Length: 129
Image 1 (spheres, rainbow, N blue to C red):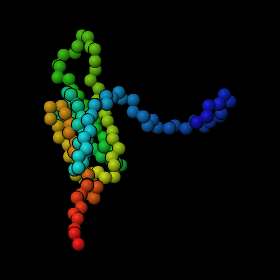
Image 2 (image 1 turned 45 degrees about the vertical axis):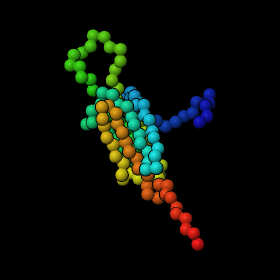
Image 3 (image 1 turned 60 degrees about the vertical axis):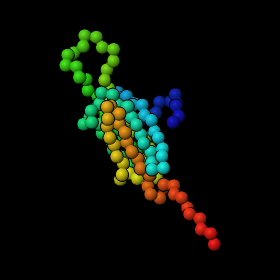
Image 4 (image 1 turned 120 degrees about the vertical axis):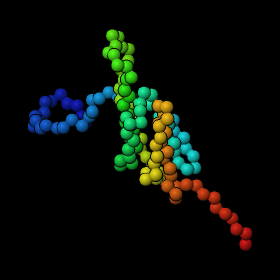
């Protein structure tokens, strides 16, 4: 896009806002690869299982989570706020999206991304003739 100093007459047309202005936190993750596939481990402190949404759409893995405070009182002084978590990953075509599984344990989300059968390494036997 070029920047000009000459004013350009444009027609005023309402364009919908496509950006979400909500503040989010990017949870730290570790990703491990094995012969069976990838394992994504995300730290989501303060999040319960029912407050997590994991979805795959258009080869993009999306993690959304909301942490809730256990305090019942309004603080007089606050140094931090709880923001929702949001993270996305582009999946390879070697991932078997139908067999993705997720589990939650003690604030840690573990997502198993298995490889498709044809993408898994296999041993080729040698015959002697």
